[in-house]
Image (tube, rainbow, N blue to C red; front, side, top):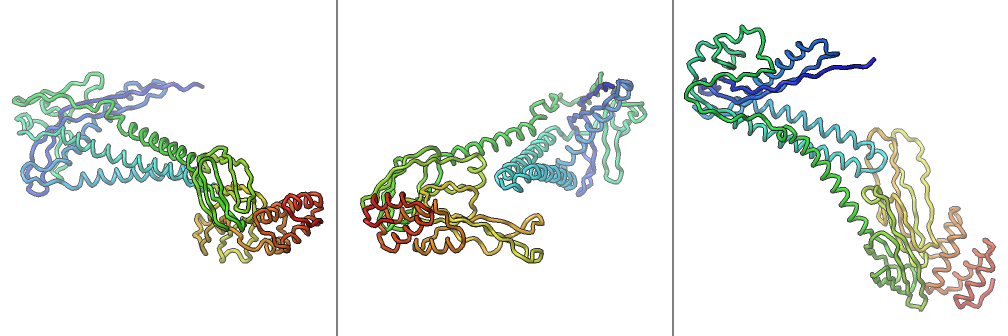
Length: 460
């Protein structure tokens, strides 16, 4: 079954007379308001066309009277200058409700991104909600300005004595007149039909004012401001992404006992033994040249690459470790609610060695100490953070501890020890430990070739 229907819309514009008693001086000035209103109603299956037109006209005239009363409540009394505080307070409450709803809705849209680990996503939508709330505030101020401009205090026309108000509140001293040339408009069967709107005649002696119906541009102002806010947020995110793409930080470490000169693209760094410095380079492929004070040098290529989410939200650590000679400890830090967990879960950990370049994703604490406590959100019972730290210990001790903990990987341990030997550490104990690791990994041929390359006469 196919549904059909028709929506009837009505727009009316009239001069409305408003009389309201001043709360301070008790005066009842007559205000003439150029008010407008719009209404609509739907006719299902087009079986109630006349009723839909009537309902649309009633809604339009109700909106017209409401606008006239609002305009009068915003303008101070011409006799004493007192302003009725009730109307501005009501408009502020309505604005606050709309603005809070907009912020909550947009924050709710961005909340899933925060939950899955992309806080920038939630921040963008929260910013859009705040910008939309600001747009509502600006539209609120402009509407008040338009309403105040449409109101004029004039002497009451003589016809007003024989005209009954279409709306009256004796307790508040409020009376609203529409079409005061008609003796008893309240006895009319219905408001004028929307298809033939007729403006009431103007009292003699008043100048004609141009109609002040809101234009389509004025009606669309909040939506245009929202579109501008969304566009601004998108451009801001795009600009931040472009800037971060060209400014990626590389941590350069020299763990050797000799000083090193490291050239990454057109940037040259001089590093003392054990030093770590940072350099900013754009994403992409870079050629690296390393020269040690002991005469050893080598070249390699590195690639800096990130996704949009990694740039804007979750951090990526780019580390260049000369000769791969310093081990890095990656580990998880697990924070648990001790009231729920009786036994702490076992975090993961691994040692990175023997590789001169690392691109490690999602590191919360990079070469910094993690806090002792964190706040758990949303009823979570635990929180997991990741940490990356330097292990500045003697390489022999590192091999021993890694072997005891079951973290020793010969494929990483061999280049790690080779890096220390090439970096200038020629202790016999280190060469002996290197021979032992080669023997355990059954890499005798590699060991012999490396010792000859390094200028050591020992053979496995």
